[in-house]
Amino acid sequence: MEFEINFTDLTLLEANGEFEEVNRLMSEPIEMIGGIKSPVPSDKWVVKSTVTISHAMGFGSVICDFYHDGKIIIISYFPSSKDLYSIDIRCLSAWASSYGWKKPEPISYIIDEWKDFWVMQWETHVIDSEFLDRKIGPRGAVDFMENPPEDEDDDEDDLYEDNIKIDDNEDLDKYR
Image 1 (tube, rainbow, N blue to C red):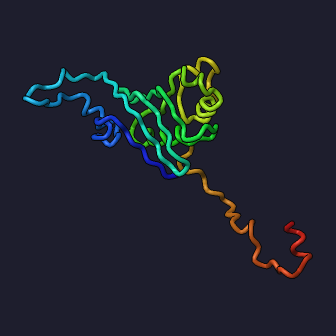
Image 2 (cartoon, helix red, strand yellow; image 1 turned 45 degrees about the vertical axis):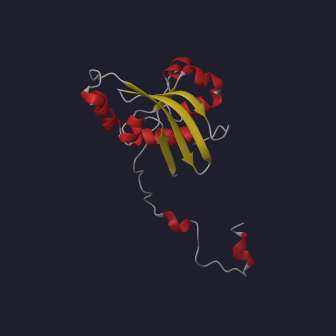
Image 3 (cartoon, rainbow, N blue to C red; image 1 turned 180 degrees about the horizontal axis):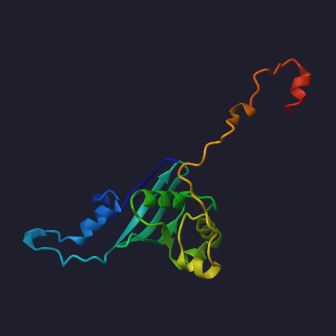
């Protein structure tokens, strides 16, 4: 699935969303106008940004806090569609994984606004949620295999048979 992520925060834009680069930029002093340096750099920072997610199904928008430890907290969510299967958060989660961030985590009042959606995202490991961990209990383990094992039987030809005679009704009946 193809999607595009855009930010309103300049630090995220400058770092192309890469966690390591955002962390570097936020941890070192920046020269300001007139030679005055920015406040003492900190290893504890947070960046707030509106994130627009565009994909074939539309545009979704989330307001997130991006933390120094790689956490992404969803503060507000404006879905591309009010559908349980909306792909906005899946796109955000895929992006986060690719760019060095942790899985997004919605704040508890966001979960309360649309419980069915957020519980489904949590159960399928699209998001993390300490709130849902406490309320529902531990999630079932899911084995995400990078490269699932190949089918050893090589049953590609099971779906098709080369000797089907179209005008022979007897052969066709066994495929109905």
